[in-house]
Structures are given as C-alpha cells and as structure tokens.
Amino acid sequence: MVGILLNPGGSAAGPVVNLPAPSLKGRVSVEEALQARRTVRRFAHRALSLTQLSQLLWAADGVTDPRRGYRSAPSAGALYPLDLYVAVGERSVADLPPGVYHYLPDRQGLELITKGDIRKELARAALYQSWMAEAPIMVVITAEYARCTQKYGQRGLLYTHIEVGHVGQNLFLQAEALSLGAGIVGAFENQAVSQIMGLPPAQEPLLIMPIGYKH
Ligand SMILES: Cc1cc2nc3c(=O)[nH]c(=O)nc-3n(C[C@H](O)[C@H](O)[C@H](O)COP(=O)(O)O)c2cc1C
Image 1 (cartoon, rainbow, N blue to C red):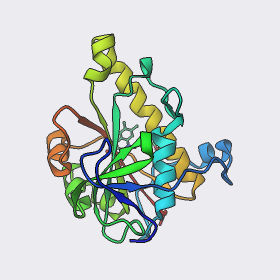
Image 2: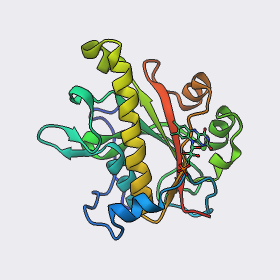
Image 3: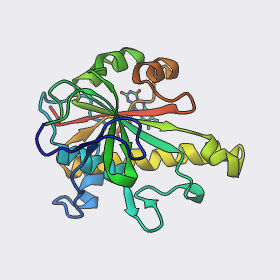
C-alpha cells in the first residue's frame, strides 16, 4: 500500500482511503468525449491507478463548490439522494485491495464496506451479464429516495431518477477523457445486488457502471 493514508473515524464507519486530488485539466475535449462515448462491454485486463479512480468519482458526483457543498451533478433542492459505491476487483486498482468501497465526496475518500472481489457475483445478479466482471471496477449508484421525497413527495422519485442519469453521463464522459470506457447496466435484481454489496437498507441500487481500459 503506497501513498494511501488509512484513517479510522471521521464521518465514516470503516477505515478511509484518502484519494488523490482530482485534476481540472484534461487532454480530451467535451465534444470529443461526447463523440466517442459508447457503452463498452469488453475490457482489457489492466489495472487502474488510484488517481484515475479518484478522477472518475469526482467527475461523477464529487464536490465542486465546497463552501456550499454543491457537486458535479445537479440535484433537485441540492438534497443529493445518491450514493456511489465501487466494487474493486483483485489486482484492479493499484494500491487498493479488492472490496466494496463507499465514496465520500466531502473528503474525496473511500470508506471500506466489505473486503473481497465481488465482481462475478454482481454480474450474476445482473442476469448473468458476464462481461461486467471483466472490468476492473464497477461503480454502483444507489438512491435513498427519502432524502428527496421528504421535500418533493412522489415527484422526488422522478427527480432522483433524473439525477442518476446526470451522474451516469458524467462517468461516461470522464471515462472517455481518461482513455477508458464505461458500460451501463440497469438489468439486475435489486435485492441480490444490495445483499452482495452490503448496502444500507434505505439505499436502492439504480445503476451499475463497469469501467476500465477498452479491449
Ligand atoms: C438505464 C439504462 C440501462 C441499461 N442497461 C443495460 C444492461 O443491463 N446491459 C447492457 O448491456 N446495456 C445496458 N444499457 C446500455 C444500452 O444498451 C445502450 O446505451 C444502447 O444500446 C445505446 O448504445 P450506446 O450507449 O453505446 O450509445 C443500458 C442503458 C441505460 C441508459
């Protein structure tokens, strides 16, 4: 484990991996990323760096205005009903052991939820879409609807579903800008995914995005 601080405590329940600061400069234009974006279903067996993982998560739904707590993706009423989890495979991210991690946007960190490589189990829970397990990481986006419905009622469900689309597209575009590819999976058994990942009962998985180098 090189270059990682493991800090117990803070707002997280488990040990926290501090992620490298994200970069605000890239070599691919937004237009080029939009033109290149495709749902990728074949991945090379090549590990990502912690810097790449940090950049992906920050782009997806990271904090871009710390003073007001605003994020990269818009959110109705700035209520932020979504959480991001990462299933990291064996030898998939340099210096990061396999496991399920919870993204902590406020401190650009990862909280370890459970140890071990669960990619194959997730692929099975996604109607046996075995291609998913070839990706070094899968980002799982969950919703805690009550954060939004307590203000907006039933309409909060719609707002939450709109928001996950923003986060998904952010991930797609950042993946392209890092010369990576992302897939997107909505076909899965919610209960199975929740159980495999050890998700809190209030959080429903909405999308799974496998990400890695394209094959
Ligand atoms: C909400 C949603 C769910 C999807 N679920 C799956 C899925 O379970 N498996 C899959 O292979 N592709 C899935 N896709 C990807 C679509 O098949 C893909 O976006 C479409 O074929 C257009 O291709 P493109 O993304 O490369 O432009 C999903 C896309 C969206 C937006």
